[in-house]
Length: 447
Image 1: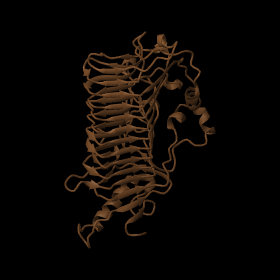
Image 2 (image 1 turned 45 degrees about the horizontal axis):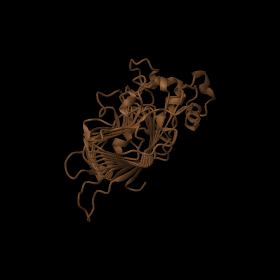
Image 3 (image 1 turned 90 degrees about the vertical axis):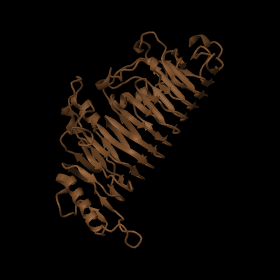
Image 4 (image 1 turned 90 degrees about the horizontal axis):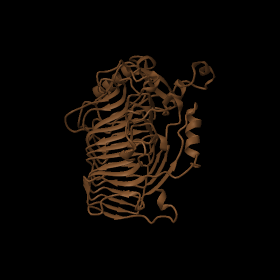
């Protein structure tokens, strides 16, 4: 094989099918032993590519990545829904075309760890200078295999709990890429600390407790063109203390406690995403300022799949689909569809809130469109059929009264333009600039 290109199935140490972790650690040790000189002919440490051909690779040993310029690649993300399979009666399994995810698939068979770092299949950790750089994960599947009982009363395979993490980046890093990957049945799919110029692009990250978590701090990173769906107690996309973060063109599935949660994030953009949730609190900005939330499609409706019917994230409907604490944010040109059963609104009899400004000042809310309709929440046995039926149904019985914009007393000097009629916007005109949308004749009394 070329000097800096490896195939896990051809490596003489270990058996990739039985423990790909042992094989990968041996390959990384070989790269480091051969690339010792930090400056040879204006180079010296080019790194390497490690290839995982299509197949199943059990991982019993954590992989430690502590060198730059390493690409671990497979031949397909291999995602398929384990949740659907585990909720099909076992006597029907013999008739299913396949039972497990495929492609180039890493089966995480580590014992539960004391923390996310210990339970990670791939741990990226290197301190010192320069920061570890240009580590890439591409085109393979990381499968946590099973969830475990958590005492909630849910079927163990529906808890999103197992102590397993797909990729855990512990130290400051630069120009990492996670592209074309599949993550399934992991309590934490991808957790990255202290990222600079990170690219998370075109991945399939679903049926995980939490999907993407950017922690510590970071700058100039992007989360783009991913298909994402977390569990009811986790985040689909979470970022803290980041600046210049771009979250664009993601399709975020329901069931995550939040679709996007930003904590201490500044001067970043959340644009052009399709967001779907079964609960309030879809997008939450906590102590986050000067961000653009624009041209996103929000859909809030009810869980239609029987195994999760009645599960929620614990938030009342007056929390808001979009809740903002911070200053100088722009909320412009978003579409909101609130398709809600009035009998299930909490607190009972309240008008659900769409956009809520909770704290801060000088936020700008303009030209947002809200469609609010009544619908009955019904459960179906088939995840696919029930979800598609719910998505395509537009024959709701009647309009639903909502508060399109609610401004709390702790939030002042905001501008709210054309984002709801006078009856739908609840803001103190003495503390905020408000221009309501014109009411359609005959409909003003409905909301």
